[in-house]
Image (cartoon, rainbow, N blue to C red; front, side):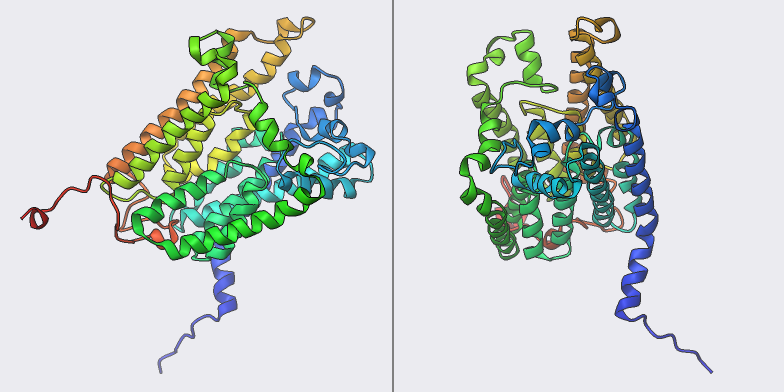
Length: 439
């Protein structure tokens, strides 16, 4: 007698599909906890109340001081009653946590950390799903990399990361309206996920998959307006603060423009035309990425273009804060999951993390002996920038020579690409004529 085995039902199939991700979720939770305890000197020792100690203990965070600086301790509502230099997604989180904190700054920090820690877990799981079942463990870079643990709770960046990765996972699963909604919320939280819409557009041009893209874009525009509209109507001046602050902001910590101005590198040190020069620089890089996307012999993977666009935005930005590593980490790994180059980059990120706080210490006349000066600081700035540029070059080489791409094995084309996966080319720049076409 032959026993027949019934196929698992839908609920069992979902459970079986989720089980492999449980260890990753637990390890991401461990990373979130380690990041919290890294800031023990501030959270439990009060170093953030004593000026220089928050730098010598490397536990600085924006979250705690902004409770006071933005009037949240006085019950001020972001944008409407107090200035906030962030998009409405972060302002919304600040307001929600303010209401739950009942006037306590430390509780405000703790609750924010709980939300950001949950965002880290969600981001890691989405990244693992984008990597696919054979490479899901690549997401451990996002869960436990030293630079992630050191920088996790400096600001609210992990929220945008979870939304952006969720949006791209929705795209990969052909949930185009959901993808647009999540990407719109990501852009409404931090500006950088806008680069991913550009990546989707370029691959749409190459494959002519316009219907999914337009569905995604329509949902994105609608949700972005829904998220921003109420604040725009209630206080337009408060809402536009982020955009005016970004355009008026001069050079700041971490950016290469800061080095150029510090050492007066000719026209690159021209503060009056800084915005124009930065826009030209990022525009040239993005144009190059567009040409690469449309002209490469083999269509690039979505994650490769997302990484290149985001890295271009960061390298040319006026400021490059240490927590920006949280932006790039998932996409660097998904674009090129080779540990030697990633490890070198991580060393430079950790190096910069310690250098920026020691630089602040060195600027204090009473503690200059404990810190560092311009030379060691800018060495760390350039090391990090060159490491990211080197990663960009390696990804470009992988695109031009797809046999180098470790993701494209066993017939895999673009497992995170959604409708782009396996799609034929419809538009390619500089397409070589075949023998048949030539005749």
